[in-house]
Image (cartoon, rainbow, N blue to C red; front, side, top):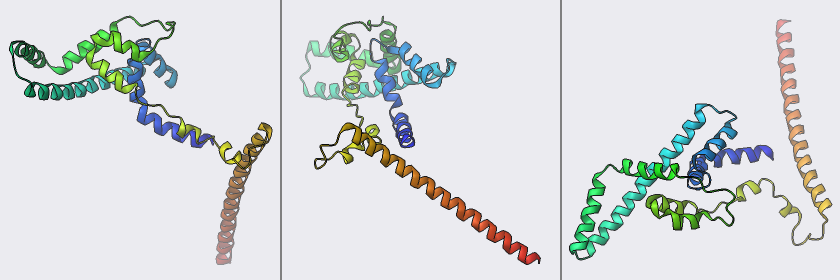
Length: 226
């Protein structure tokens, strides 16, 4: 059961590690320091490797900001093409064009650095909700605000991990609903013990077969020598 759990953990951790790192950075109570401590705790070291992993997550978030900016530009260009151009619209378009002439990476690096350098929100803040914070205070970081809205909307499921342990559903069914907790525990443990016993017996049979074949080979060689 534990081996099955480790396999699933490694699979999902490799897929979701970057996304979880970005979610940590976008929490105004945690940001870089918390992410660095998490990597130190996971790797069991405080070397530069942990700082490199934090930098990789920040670079990943910067790339994500550029992608969001490209999508926003396409939406704005389509709206400007459909709308009549007046004096104010022309000035607004001119300002947007001037801003777009600056390298995108520099713009987003400035926005991200400004956010990361701001003071952390206290962990003791009562009733704190990260999406509410981005809705109000996140106005200063428009691109990060859009990313946070989408990142924190992703549901976190525990179905895959629980499926490695949830054998009680097959023991306590609607037709067997009056079992006590002690009896359920006994049935579940017995099932696991029996499975392991059969696995051990199978291994012992394979070892016995191997030694039997080896003995037959040795006997055959001895007969040839005679």
